[in-house]
Image 1: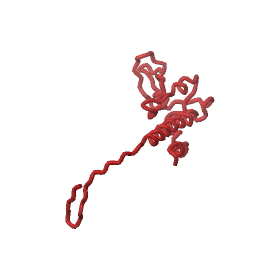
Image 2: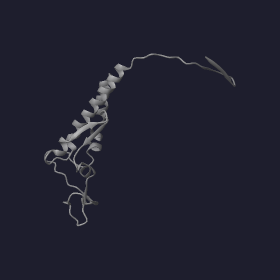
Image 3: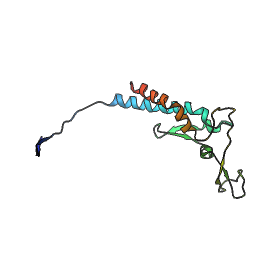
Image 4: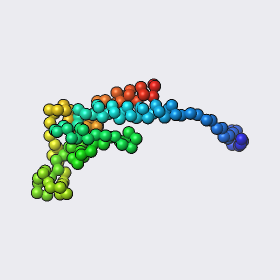
Length: 142
């Protein structure tokens, strides 16, 4: 133990070791993360553009359930919501052809997913954030 006097104060410095088993807490946090990411995916589905289902069905998680991935070549394009054209002005560019974003928004069909559109995560978060917080609280026992 170390004592030190500073002005009118006594400062005591000591090292105390405590052995705490955090395995239950770690398990609850892992369950909370898993429950949260699964709920986000479920709540976001109706916001994801849907024509043939490839984009919606490509979703998975990685990095220990901390990232949601939509794994199609056009996921970013649909997420951002702007039309992209090649140098000829065609949206049907050949593979490896450079495309440019133009200032025109995509139109999304609402036939299969009623809220389909750009930036589906942000829009779902606006509508479902409180529910997502509740999922985590429930998993950790709050």
